[in-house]
Image (cartoon, rainbow, N blue to C red; front, side, top):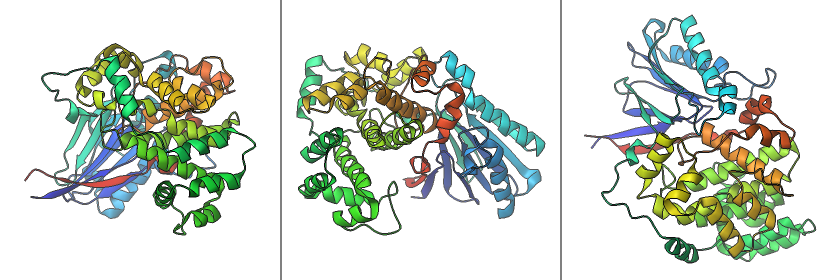
Length: 452
């Protein structure tokens, strides 16, 4: 059996290759994907673009994120590798107005502006666009087969749409029973959460609590050496982590490690892949932290924790969503509805409410319980409203610009009001997209058995 590599071209990255058994793939929502292939040499590549141009011309740290700077880089890299300019052809996809659609989406039109910038550059270089599916309302997967040069554009998650003949949806009692049987977040993490909420907590006490749980300590050390947190110096002990990373970072590692164990109980109902819920949670934590630093409205460590925990209710419902995924998918796409509406209609409860119930059961601080309950609709007046808004924004940014890990539909009808309440406006949205940490968009490669 032949083995074909599948390389996930993450947002803000590009990849090129010669002719060989390899699929370059990008999952696209509001982002725009561009695949360019040389018909003579068999050399091709793909770029995954977030924005039409840099938000600041003086600080372009990752030019691959922007159409105006990234597309020229892709073409130059192809020509340097041996592609011939007169034989290049291009395929474009993405730039979707991911629903539920609102006036704010039409006003921002980031995907449309990005696609226009790409087309303008390609026209200037006389590169033919042989296929273009941009705009619309659906997330998709752009795939370039480097063995043949063929490009495909398919709805994201299409492989999960074969529904079983009989889908049995749970009763409220069954959902409550499954909630009671889930393994909870470890006690050490819950203690640390409460210590973080207490502004007078002592750092040494937090470290002492962490040391009491060897399993969580080991997981935290492993996570410290992962792609999300890795430093040049390998971390081999908790004390070493405290020295090299600092207490704040170690506290985040411990909570992340504990939450990972909880999310491991989910399969792939909401997510397009095993582990997708945790990947999204960790990404949301990092984006929420970046937003907190930018706005100064919330203590960054609290924002990180709330982002990490916002979707704990999905673990409760995941086992029921998995067999009914085609039903959820079609309801979202065909009726253009947000996920909470679909959950309430089909399951009698949504993941935000399920998360609130868990937060109360586990005695979470009130700020976290509020953010979990209202992260889709954070307008409820509360001292914790800014925290809920930051988590909402982080969730929204990832749902539009880091597609491919979970089924999510987020309402943006009140986006302008939410931004205004934290002293931002729609003109700042491009800057918020630019805040997504590069590590959240990190590319991965995986092997998959190809058809013989």
